[in-house]
Picture 1 (tube, rainbow, N blue to C red):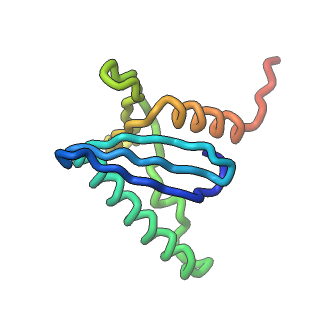
Picture 2: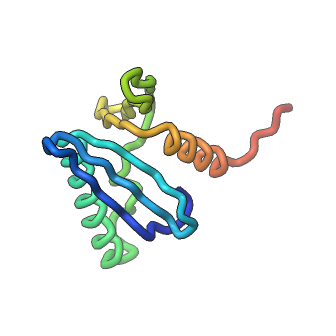
Length: 126
């Protein structure tokens, strides 16, 4: 999703073990994610961490530590397709061996790949 988030919807399964999240941008494009109880808790923890970082950056002075120091410097990555639901499962690791697991729907993986490729400078083939 390239636009601004205009709507968020959350549905919870009857047994409380799973939820479905729908994100909608200003052009009514949607991204849908399903999550288990554990994955949803991890998502909420990530949102809380991001909110804290946003608040820190809003009040930070130029002399403060750069925000990039808080990011994982990825040195390797591995991915596989989940045969059960078609989601992409992966792991991002840094040189120190810290690993972050990820799970994303194919649409988000495509958007992320596109965004990364557009960010990189063009390389000459000669």
